[in-house]
Image (tube, rainbow, N blue to C red; front, side, top):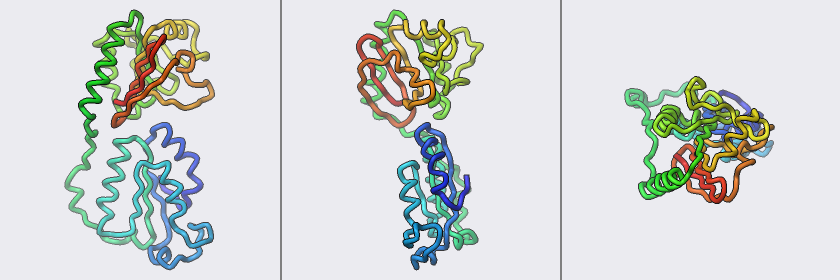
Length: 257
């Protein structure tokens, strides 16, 4: 995505940030000389401050790079692309007019960007596994519910592996539609709270445990699909993705990964 007036794109980008949509936002801006001299141009609020729109986007970007120095441009771009992929959220790059024609170091092109996810803390990961196994062992009627972040964080192979190994019934949220092979024998349909088909609503809300993978806890026109079944909530956070472990009668735990 390229623009010259980044404030016009704030609405779309804040939505992308909240819903884990990766966007590379490249913003053309006045030359480094104009910025240094504080000229009164349209990329300011009429006060010569060329940082104002970057400061706004700082809150809705997982990486922000100002490409002002040809000696660091290559590493800055690599870092932004890496974070965009790993965090699945927008990144913000400013490109001054006098940098466009500058030569930059090209040796980095010979080395692929490292897109590996950082590892989880072993103690916290073991805790998550223990909690999942504890509630799964006690549950008599568990189901899996897959949401959009399973798609956006690219864990669909792992999701299908979990479905196959556990044999549990699986449902998707409206934003997670397409995450699960709908010809799979365990697939039960789309769960959207009060907007669900009656048989889907009854099946999900009759379960005593829901493993929700990739949940996005935001408001939408249908309301939160989990609002009908949530109880108490505690949370853990990992590096990426989301796993909710919900015991309908007593416990609601949130994890990432």
